[in-house]
Image (cartoon, rainbow, N blue to C red):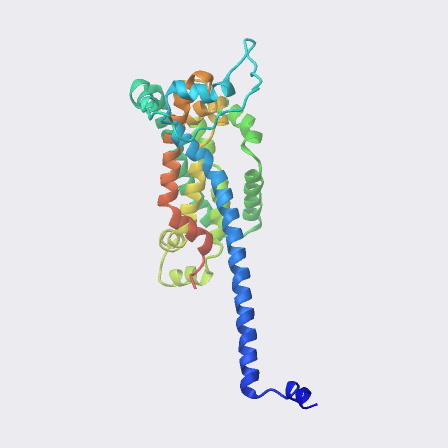
Length: 324
């Protein structure tokens, strides 16, 4: 009985506190282990998918330094054609090679020095895309300001039509664009690419959504100080939408930098085609050159993204309002 009493005696305050602290410490340790295991699992999954997404880019860059014979030996059967013009059935596995046997700059030498046609196509891409980005943003910012400042049923109907046009893929409007360009005698000119691109509703929709988040009290304060509509637009609306404009500029640039259908349909002269058209029509004799061209072709979008990354993040988190 005395032994049983010693075992069932009530705990003192110090012993209860020690047991409680031990239980809390054990629970915290368990949570930390679970959190660490979960973080390791998520990190592993993220690294795996990052490797999958970055592998084609890494493969393109490393293969651009291979010789033409080595590239043809590894990938020639992928692009080979039969005598009738059809594709050849690949019975063997393609050899994905990340490290070249011997580093060669012959592909870049051909692209930059020996064959000026590819440099011309590169500058065609620049000439086609840069005016579209600049003038589309200029027109879209003015249109977005008008949609934001002025209310009315007609304005809402026009904005609704903008949304409908934005939802349509370019392939749907390609035939009307071709007919209009033919009517205006713009076929086989850069204007057939510029005008539809400049009038695209995508930037108008996004900038309107951002400008509508600007508090009306700011506009009213500017009007009280004597600012006109142009000053309200230039000194209040545009600075507050700087992040949104940067985001839209990046998206528009990447979209039109990769365009293929527009120049193929609206410009018949291959001399005015951008470099993206060449990359969409790779044949067996140009596999090695295509790796070098693709590597250089990736540089402008990467530079634009790196330069405008802060604007892109600001445009996503800021959204045209007042920072808290």
